[in-house]
Length: 546
Ligand code: GLC
Image (cartoon, rainbow, N blue to C red; front, side, top):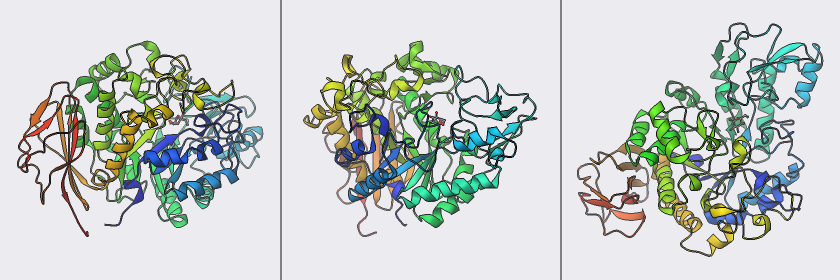
């Protein structure tokens, strides 16, 4: 089977703006990021996903793009971007960027022109309605902060559609000229060397909105076109889609023959991992894996615990959501949009190293490609005094130095977390690099082992019957061999009997990763011991020469 890079990747998601400032203006930039590439190489990540880097008025952290062909001058130039790609290549690291093409900023020249005159060549690039749409309150993405999905534009004398904030007018994808232009945008960045895109709001991109009835038609075929287009420019170019949709729609995004998008974030598993951690039970994760549709060949899930948004718990049942809120986000200021939690993982787990490690091993043990948010590897905290999702977008904490070593300016783009258990004097890269017992050192070791177990990315996953609600057992069989993951979600130790469900050959099983040194498991796996909140990855076989 041919190897596909995105199935072997460890993706690191970062916002250039809050990563490293190099010129003292308080804003992270591409030169700052370049100076940290060796850090990322040592951590072991293989792919960077950059949150939007384009010129922007900055009203939605860059997700309001004012020019798809540029780099925001605060971050650097196109030349700097090409240099970044080059320096990444030298280290074997790929670059993906956000593709935010459901909408533009209302300050984008296309929208300015479109609203200014019915004769504008860009008028039909947006979605307008002359009459007030009947269901204009429906479909909001940010309840409590967004009034509706249609707003009246005085200048145009028309209503325009916006799935997100009112300053993010939706592009009219039904117009072939728009699709062609986005094709050019994609081609442009591929030529500059990106390996792919994280597609923002994918379901909204391909929905056609009918203002008179409020109905929405999905055009999955546009994804085929995008995929073809990318494939002609760069054969291994890949798209990772953000599509938090019901289970029955998921396969449509991959395409029945895997001919649309290669990767999708697994939102169902994300919520159920938190439920499993809250309840000390493996059942929610087992249910999620078993409910996941079988993917077409060469398609993959992307797993994640935290990203730049709130944790969306809307897919859980009321009682399940209540358990997660009670454990991990009990205060109103920790919650957002009536559905989620706006905290980082470490504070959610009370800074407990064992629980943080278990959570990440759980993520890494699930089928697919792991995506890690910057700062999680050192256990950064959040700042709940900041608005909405800004709480989890504070600057990277590099050292116990003013403003965490992020900037020399006393006016950082966002405050650095300075006080308490998660402030930079306590939580920072420099101290953790010198400490073999730190969370960062643990991440480095764990990612190294993960990369030696490609079965998690390419193998088929079987859920094992551990006969214990608290212990998760997964077996992966791939071209490189077989591995077994055994995780104990609860506090009490457990020993599980997996005889007959797994087989070890040629001197295996061998522990590849474990929360502590265990006595070797017996060859028939009839007694696999695992401590409370402990974990083990056992290699069962290795294929040589396949
Ligand atoms: C996606 C992004 C989110 C952004 C929104 C609008 O959901 O993840 O951060 O606000 O799209 O572009």
